[in-house]
Length: 198
Image (cartoon, rainbow, N blue to C red; front, side, top):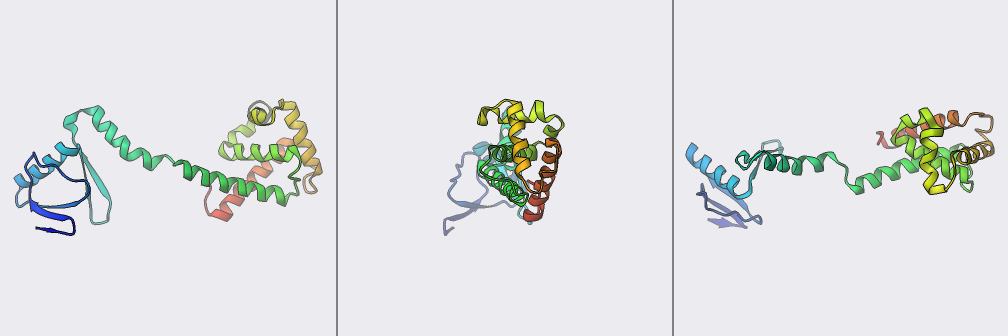
């Protein structure tokens, strides 16, 4: 019996091939028929997905093919769920940069200054890894060297100049305190605007 590309038939024997372009309904009336059906599907594709009433999919993997096969199939299903796709990462990066730009604008940082552009990159790096703040000169400043072609001393000098030009930050004497303050404000901005920290 066939209707709308869907087939209903008795439990298959082990030699039946399944088409990936159709849905199959297999009626099994006893345990042996169920086992034959499941075995045939596992022999064909090595893995079987079963959906429960909540729509969650549970996978049955053919362990007879060896441990490395099983591990490969598990990774195939699990890794896409765990790792962000490039498009997700790009979206999250855009959100963080938008929050940084908003904070820098609020503090009156001039976008034309090299120090402000450096600050923008440093704040993004700090957002991703706040531990870098513990040793800014050794760990943080060298991260912008390839992009700006500057030594750590030049990076700090440009940052100081940009900070002194800011009406709200010009009284600050230590760059590290400004970085910490702007990092905290960026985190607050992302959380307030988007409801979660990326």
